[in-house]
Amino acid sequence: MSRTGTSRILGAVFLGLMATTAAAQDLASMEKRTSVRTLPNGLTLIVVERPEAPVFSFFTHVDAGSAQEVPGITGLAHMFEHMAFKGTDIVGTKDYAAEKAALARVEAAYAAYSAERRKAGRDEKRVTQLEKAWKDAISEADKFVVSNEFDEIVQRAGGVGMNAFTSSDETGYFYSMPSNGVELWAYLESERFMKPAMREFYKERDVVMEERRMRTDSNPVGKLVEQFLGAAFKTHPYGMPTVGTSADLQSFSATDGDAFFKTYYVPANMVVSVVGDVKAATAMPVLEKYFGRLPTRPKPASLRAVEPVQTAERVVTLRDAAQPIYIEGYHRPDSRHADNAVYDAISDLMSSGRTSRLYRSLVRDKKIAAQTAGFNGFPGDKYPHLFAFFGIPTPGHTNAELRDAIRAEIERLKSQDVTDEELRMVKTRANANLLRQLDSNQGLALQLGTAQARFGDWRAAFRQVDAIEKVTKRDIRRVAAKTFVAANRTVAQLESTQAAKAEGSK
Image 1 (cartoon, helix red, strand yellow):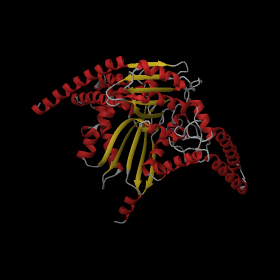
Image 2 (tube, one colour):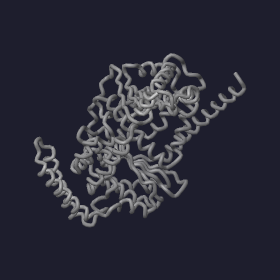
Image 3 (cartoon, helix red, strand yellow):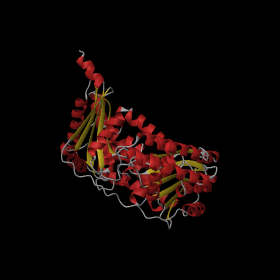
Image 4 (spheres, one colour):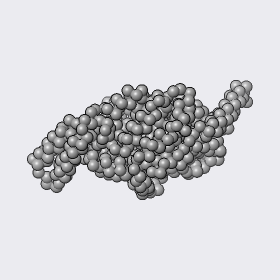
């Protein structure tokens, strides 16, 4: 072995030991600074004392995403995320009593319009009249709206980074504030989940529809991914788009939104984590005071849909005047499975940076790909999901070349042990990634809140690193051989019509 190679391995060993020690110390330190309490209504609170600066960050995790939707209301989880910023019966209104009555008229008008529009042999003139009546009702309700008042209150109090997300598995809300704003934040955050107002619902529905047009309908990659997931999941809602289908985004109502909220935004389905310059002894009673007001409701039933075992390869081809793209995915178990750490190790081995197998083979050596990766958690990881590989060919190269090169690397995983150095670096990076995730208040709040919701213990964020540390070469070959087989594979490829034209003109 060369002196350079020896030095590299010694350096990797040193980094691995340092990272492992640091992670262990961080967990021990975190346990001393972390308080967890489950309120009588079922909501779980986490407070982490981290007084480095006079600020705090929070993360509200709602254990509901697009996987909780059914055809007819796809996109509703994302839609309610938008509505959570519209205010309450106090914030965002000039006169809520009058606005509430006006919103009821909007819903009555929409129900009449929607029913007539769906009729077989509908009367088009009647549809037009009812649509006008509905839009007139919206105009009346809009007179009571104070736009963006929720956002403005937070910003005036020094709040920054206000945002939210909806995924297949969950919905999350977050921002940061000066540490003297804990009580104001607790009031606002609990209030919007206690008494949300469905104001400007149809205006916001149009905004979401525009998001879909930009990200999917007018985006070849978005269209390909939507077709890919639809082919891979025939029964499970992972096959439905998180943003919603065009038809559903033009049909579901504020009444549907309210029903979704009442079913899934229940305290027992929520975790709120707070990290920063806060003292648990003083902050926890404040959080209990406000979040304890949320009414107790039953925890929603578990998802019933189970994806059947795939028994034959599925292939989707999209033709578009865009750059070619190749994707293939394989079904794998959910994130609670005993082999989850093995899949994480394979993802790192195949895709982590310029030393990864796919980058070295397809990008650096063969120069057939501009980008390539293999990764877990697609489109979510709470339920059985996909381990996916993708590649974008460089000019003059094809999806078929990428397919063959990716599968050659997959076969290497199945037939040859990874090297000692590769496995060591996978474990070192896992530790380093954990430390990076804990670096900010916001990142820590998100990691701990998600772990608490998913696994019932915030410490799971640390234990995954321990699980990766135990992964062996044999584990990687075993899991690769079991998972990456043709019958378990779904392929999606975008074929460029421009490239076909150019080829035909030669």
